[in-house]
Image (tube, rainbow, N blue to C red; front, side, top):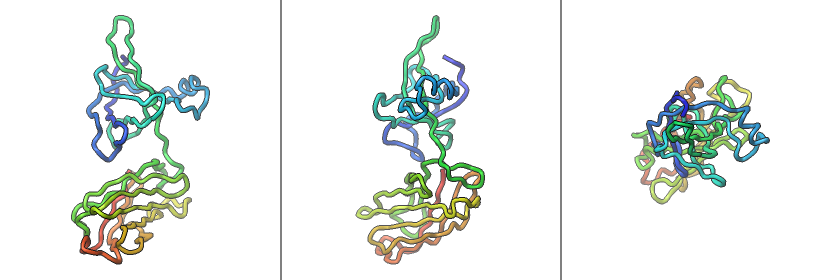
Length: 233
C-alpha cells in the first residue's frame, strides 16, 4: 500500500453532498493516473476509464457497482472537495506486505460555466435557511443538476402535500460576474413561479449566491412571509 497523503469521505449509492457521508475520516494514498488510465481503457469516453487510484486499508467500507451502476463516490478531502466516481475496487497484497484495497477513480468534471475564473460543478445545492417566512420549508437542501447548457434544476417534496423546485441560470453566459446568475422558485399550489430573482449577495472565489425576499402570490397557511435561498457548491 502506498503512503497515505490525503483524507477522504465516501458516499454510497443514493447519497450525495451536502448530506453526511456514509463513511468519514478515511486516510488513503491518492495518485493521479490520467495517461495510464486512458491507455488502459483505449477510449477517453470508455465507461470504465479511470484517472486516479486510491489505496486504503482493507477494512475500509468502500464499494463499487461494477460492471453496471457507478453511483459510489469519493470526495477529497471532504464533501466540499473534489469528487470522484468509483470505477472499480480490488484487493491487493504485495510481496511480504499487508492486504489493502486499490480503488480506481474517475474525476468528476466541472461544467463549462464559469463564475469569474472558477469552473462550476455539474451539481450545486439549493438550501432554504432556518427562520425564513415558510417554517415547513426551513432547512430544505437539495441538489440541483446542470442541463448541459446554462441552467441547474432540482425539485423535492415540501410541506407534506406540495413540491418546490429551483431553477438557477446564468445569463449572459460570457459574463464574468456572479450577479449574472438568477433564480426561479416554484412552490406548487402557491401561485405562479417567482423569478427570475437577482442575488442579494454573491461571490465567485468560494461560489455562493444568496437570494432573499422570495414571496409567493398565494402563501396559504404555510407561509407568513418571503423566504431566502442560498446556492452553494
